[in-house]
Amino acid sequence: MGKVLACADDLAAVLQKLHALIPIFKLFDLFSKISGLCLHPKKCILILTSISASPHNANLVKNWLAANIPKWVNFQICNHAVYLGINVGPTAHKYMWKDALSKFVTRTKQLSEEHPPIALAVARYNSRVASVLAYISQVAAPPKHLAHIELAAFNRVLHFPTSGLSIPAINFLRKNLNFNIISLRSMMVANKTRASINTIKNIET
Image 1 (cartoon, rainbow, N blue to C red):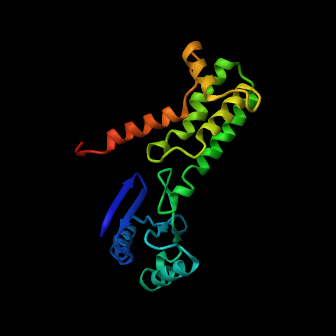
Image 2: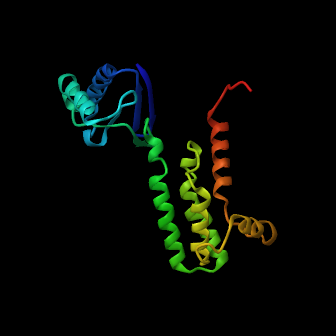
Image 3: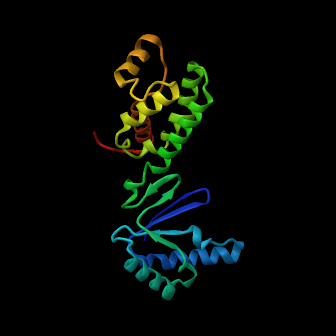
């Protein structure tokens, strides 16, 4: 039928066709009768991968569910959703970094408003701010304009004018003054490389 994945109580099934939902529903229905545990329809999502989740197509899927699996008729229907903290689906790339970057900017502002000494600001930036972008970088290319995003964060946290620092200037400080502030691109490349080594097996080189 396809591929089923599970991490604790977060379940995902990648199916070749809509009709494959029927045997899966029967399994969930049996388990519900045995355990008393039920799916919450509003927390369940169908991600369409071969067609657009337009109102027309979504309505067709809902009609099919109403006829074949009425208990699941209130599932959300879309082209992307978050699974284990990462957007998946054919349109996921448009939203992959949205929430993480928003959180990154928020934490940058919070750190700036605290006005800690520079050494402490750098330590907090590394552990609380830059780390926000680490998780998604395991599976996704860096966001557009990463250098601009990074420089804006540096200048805000260190209270420089908007264009006060440049990437070469930051690299000079790292190399010559032991200014140990994380490079977002280096962190992302390291995370993706480590994730690849740990998860991709039996690949001929």
